[in-house]
Image (spheres, rainbow, N blue to C red):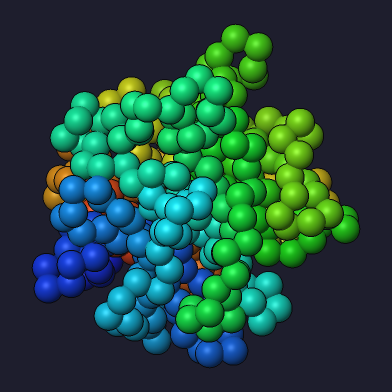
Amino acid sequence: MKLTKHENNPILSPLESSEWQSLVVTNPACIYDEERQKFIMLYRAAGKDIEHRVYLGLAESDNGIDFTRVSEEPVFGPSFDAYDAGCVEDPRMMKIGDWYYVTYASRPYAPGQYWLMDGNPYKPEDRPDDFPVKYRESLTTTSLAVTKDFKKWYRCGPLTDPRYDDRDVYFFPEKVNGKWWMIHRPMEWCGEGYPCEHPGMWINSSDDLLHWDSNTSKFLAGAEYDWEQKIGGNTPPIKTEHGWMTIYHAKGEDGYYRLGALLLDLENPAKVTHRSRDWFLEPEFSYETEGCYDMGGVCFPCGAVVKDGTLFVYYGGADMYVGVATGNMDDFMAYLLSCPI
């Protein structure tokens, strides 16, 4: 099973005339809003500033392919001096009731042009050992923001344990057995004493969307196939009659980011029932292999939508562009159901 990349890809690209999105427009979250009858996208954006502050932009579409940027300014950005003062990245978006819930990765300090510094994001040199590790090492924390209109935001706070570099975080769009559920990927939870050699996917449940006890997280999935090494979750789960479908990325030994899918039990999301044995999307074209951060190929989605029987997967190409790939949802599910655990 392979998805089809749209002939108009990339559907969004950096905009030279707009300073805050002149270098990077990528890693899009997307939902279809039934009330507004529109595809709504939040995308990661950055300009050419030395600090490399990262923002979120907003775009909309009637058909899921042709997106129009809604605002000349970012709709959400780093705070002034708090836990997310450096950047807001890689949004995932869930609509629950009338509210849009957005999880996003952030650092306390702007990372700088780390692709020019051996891949090492900026961190202050004057932080003593007594400082919290997050502020000593500028670890990535995932946080929650909530809005009704993308104008007024509630910056709710961190979701993940500040002792770990934890990203690729998103919720299920509804409670399951009276609990909220969240998938996450702590970078440090691998190797000796852990069920995975490289970083993998973990799942947790809670009574409250802001409080998650890391001690209750359960291992969900790690690398299984030869195209996988480090893996992480990507798209908020889509509820089907067969289970919760979520897409994940796998970075292989060749440095390429390819996509697979999991099917999770409807009543117990911590149980994987099916898993794609092969990737269904991989980097091929220049907008997926030639970016500013890394010359390795990247397909990295943060949103998936099912509309009129079509699966739309919105992904960042080469950490620099936005692409979309589509397929028949019934065919996609038939393939996934042919891969039981």
